[in-house]
Image (tube, rainbow, N blue to C red; front, side, top):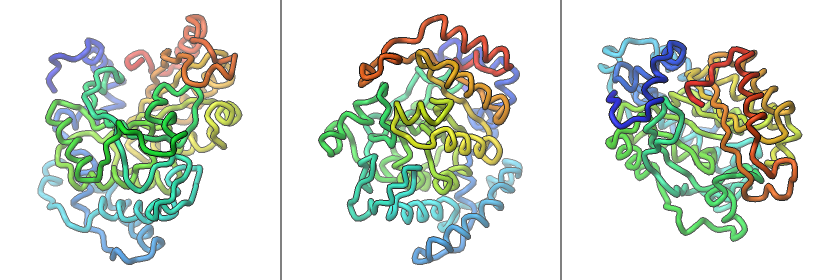
Length: 370
């Protein structure tokens, strides 16, 4: 990897031994010593018929998932000798995702609408996917830049403090896709990803809004991508267990938001039920069953240190200790925060210091990426 034109901390972060250890496979993909998971998945033959029942398809996927995990242990030279097959692990995942789309259960709202037939759930995203921008992002976490970010329209949350409200929520009152959004299918999305890779992106970063409503398109795009580049899931992580199962073997790196340390705050400010239960379930899975290469994003909110920040850090150190945490001070009172006096201000320097000191006390790795 060339370090020219990178932020200074993007270079110095890799001098940290813990960063090198925790993100070793990601770094090896950057240095072309390892293969991205999705490239390996294309070589795994799966036996299925498009007309098979959803239950039968899921069973085949579960069987092949174990075989795929064994492939990850094979040396690069052996993997390069494997040929891409037509019916593979990705095509099977895409087919299952499309079946889920007929009774949408991608997120834990479980709207169960038939998006194939034009029905819309809470996110208001139809069967098609829409993006608002795709560019090399130099403002992400140190080890991720330059990041090939692809911003999707729409979100399954209703955060009153959303900083991307223009692409996630504000358009919903009209109940139609924003005029600035561009429709993409798997092939065109893959084309965007390839162009970002050619420009020097270290990863393909699916973000929004939120990428969750677009799982079918994103998985489908992997069939058409060819670059050996890290696939990165950047999300609020309010996925169902079924949806995460389709992604957990294909994504190389995880960038989840961890907003709240309890369910009540999530319901009050984001309109989400069982938030903490769902988030911790999913984070535990990607830590233990997935790549385990994770940066937790925690946005420190004013007056929410004891109820949210500290419980989140406690969970990280107790249950997902290999994670690195970005303690973010970028919260600002925007969108509808004026409805809630307690969060209608910036976090103070005292609050930020308290969170960081608590992370230090717990021995959490946060400085290289915050």
